[in-house]
Length: 479
Image (cartoon, rainbow, N blue to C red; front, side):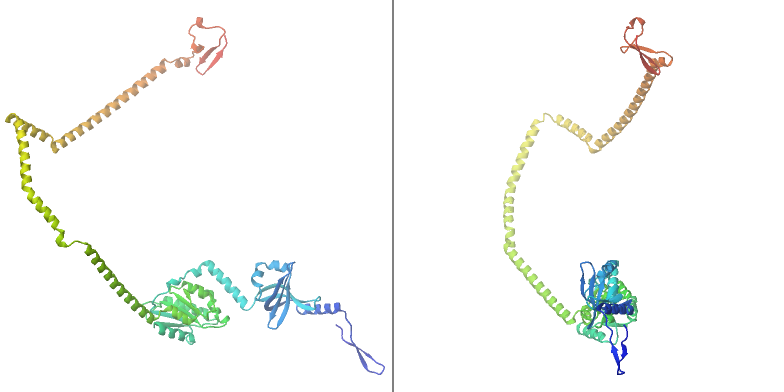
C-alpha cells in the first residue's frame, strides 16, 4: 500500500490525501501479505466443526482456548493421506497441521490450507502408545500372564515404588490392617527418564533373588504409583517395562494412577488394581475374616458330622426293627432238624431193604460162580486195556504211524507226479516229431480243399479253390 500523500494549501498549510482502493485491491494486497508472511507454517490446535463438502473437501477449525483458525484440506490431499487421515482428523483430537496461511475474499477471513497433519502433544504420545499396544497384542505379549496365578497367601510381597511418597504408606497400612506380611520395597523413580530403566531393573532383580537367600524372593510384586498427569504416567507405557512385566515369573499387580488412569502394564500384569490401596487388598485376605470363616467352616463340619451320625443311627434303628429276633432265627431250622432226625432210622431201614432186594435179584441171575469168576477176569482185562496210560500209548503209536504213512504218501505222490511229467514230455516230443510241421520245414507243402487234405490227384475237385500251406504261410489258388 502507498503512504499518505501531502500537498500545500494557499495559506501554506499541508493537507493530507487518503488513497482510495477497491475491495478487490484490498483483498489482493491482504492475501499477498499473508501468503508472503506465512508461506509454510505448522499450527497446533484442537479440531472442531469438522465437515466434508460434496466434492470431498474437508473444512474444520483449529481451536486453542478462545482463539480459532479456519482450515481447509482439498480432496486431493485428503485422498493422498488416506488411512492416516481417518485416524488423526477427528472431532476433539489435538493435531499439528502443516500448510500455508491465505485469505478467502468471499467472506473476508483468513485460513490455513492444510497439506499434511499429525498428532500433537498428548495425542502424539497416545498414537505411539496405541501403535505399541497393537504390536504387543499381535506378538501375544499380553497373553503370557494369567490372573489365577496370584498366590492365595503370599509370605513375602515386593513393592516397586517411590520410597518417600504416600503410596508405600497406604500399602503398608492396608496390609497391616488385613493380614501383616513381610514387605520388601525396591525404590524407583516413578516418573521422568529414569523411571522405565529403574522399574525394569527392580522387576528383574526381584525375579533373580533366591528363596533361601538373605533377601528372600517375593511371592508377589506390586508396581505402584499415585495419581498424576498423563505425562507423569508415560514411563509405565514404555515397551521395555511392559515386556519385563509380561515375562516376570513372579505374579504382578499393577497399581499405577487412579481408577480412571490406564497404562500398558495393566494389560501385561496378572491383575490391575484401580489404586495402590486396592492392590494391597488384592494381595492378601483379611485375617479376621479368614479366622471367622475357618470357625464357621469348623462349626458347619461339626454340625454336619453330628447330623450324619444321627441319621445313620436312626437308619440302623429303623432297619433293625424290621429284622426278626435272633432267638427266632433258628427255631424253624431246629424244628426241621428234629423232624429229619426222627425219620432217619426208618428211612435207613427202607433203603437197606431195597438194596437187599436188588442184590438178591442179581445173585439169582448168576448161573454158576465160574461165570462170575470169568466175568471178573475179563472185566479186569478190559479195565487194564481201558486205562489212561494204555490209551495214551496207543494214541501216541497211532499218531506216529499216521505221520509215517503221511510221509510215505507224500513221497509216492511226488514220485508219481514226476513220472507223469516225464511221460508228457516224451509224448510231446513224439507228436512234434510225427507232426506235419516238421515235414513243412523240410520243403514240403500241404494241399487242402474244403479244409480236407488232398493226398491224391484224383480227389482234386475242379472249379474249387485249393489252399496250399508252406512253412511260412498259406495261399488260396483257383483250379
